[in-house]
Length: 129
Image (cartoon, rainbow, N blue to C red; front, top):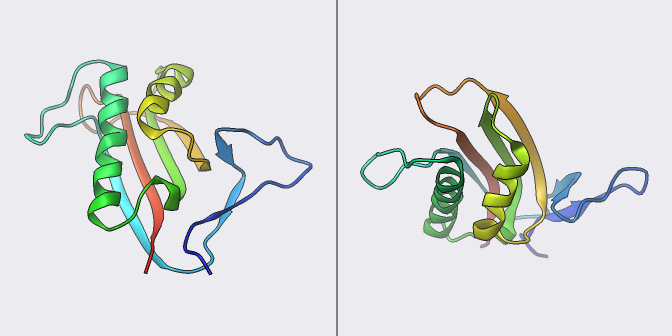
């Protein structure tokens, strides 16, 4: 068996090329990546939506890599966008970093806890044995 999550896309639901409706985790250890902002290694928040989204995704990828995983093992992303942020612009900014790895995704509009933060991304992934 594999620890790569498997997409579940019922035929009666929309099949997006960007996300899956559900994911099966056949085996492996689970990794929960806490919410990552567009914050650099010094804790400084970068400016602008595109820069924050790209860095938040790179931060998620760094945690995955450190744990021995990668974007292909992500079963679920939750993306928290500040109220009023254009989700389409955030998605476009994420694609250059995330690539074409389909996963289940939830996008929420929130009032950020950190002033100036426009995005926070968390993930659930498997770690191959």
